[in-house]
Image (cartoon, rainbow, N blue to C red; front, side, top):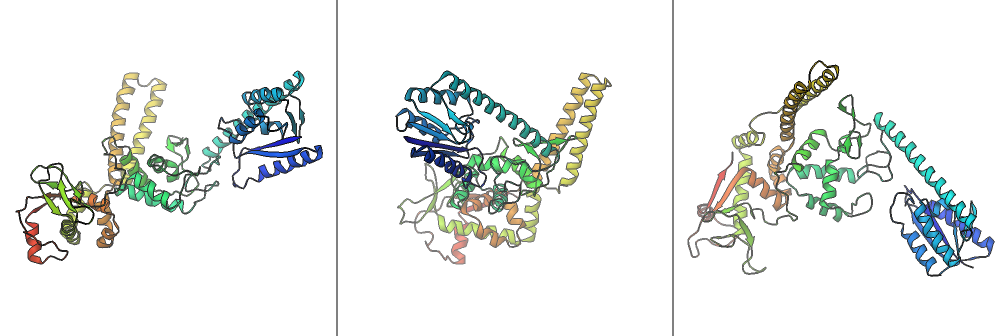
Length: 477
């Protein structure tokens, strides 16, 4: 008899499909004992029959059964074939209509062509469902206990940058740390996703990264070493519960990420990295609009910066980039300018983040005390609401200060670098533009008509001086 075999395993942490292979070997041995010819094998590896996910192998098997491609089906156990009554009824409808025989390795025949056989199949399905629900309840309770103890909780899929056991996993962990630093220095989420995909990094489901997935990963407090449940921090005695695993992103950096990526006033990063650093940064003196890089003569002609759509000015892009780059590097080399930059980038003051966190903890303790006083009847509802509103306002103000201290732009990164020139050299044109935009305003002035400046890559000092007459640079410090 033409026979098909169906196998399934719910969890395959190793990815080696060994459970499915063992099931198939047992099913094949049963077919040989019965003298049946195995013509097709359908399998679903690492897919539960109960969680609602699509089972491609199961669906293909039903289609083939409906098409009369085989007259018998063998599975290892009934719960490998179905664990929901809906799937069972689909199997019954097709098997009964096509008179397909069902055999199992461990539970004998499934006689779906008789009322008593169908009743037994339904009973087995109900028992299997109860076992799944009971197992799920036990697992949830065990996970709650592990979280309360600060232990790592194993799930069906490992977390990005960690192993299933909560150990640091390379190269993902290093990539995540670098991404956190890059976002705070101006790199777009889209750019990080493109970079990760190009390096062969994937989500733990094996998919390519999108900017949204990168954002969710960076904002997950699990990576700071905090215990979480569904991406929400678990609290104990009013304080975040810290886990036993290694943190990949430090707390200050994570606070900066939360502040930056959750800011409703933040202009979303463009989905591409600029190739010219002053594009969208410098402005036209005549109309005040930003200038952009264009190649009016095609790819073989030089790049110029011009405003759109009026084109009041068209400045040699290569030379303008060189001119502004020289100014930036000179600024970062001067001690007085560096001091002014440090004051500006730090908001003009030093921030004691540790002291701010202590203040926040004190506010949280006072809010807990207010709640207990309200329960005891020592204060009425209006007093509780008033005091709570005041404390929340103070807490929000502290949170803004902590976030501001943790949220550094690319200019701060260059200022903190041991070698600003090397830092600048490693930056993309897009990041260089962000540095420039933080510390200075560039305005392109109208230039006289005619060959007022020689178009070459090594202008003389006098030519540079004349070039500078038509570029207005205003420091923001």
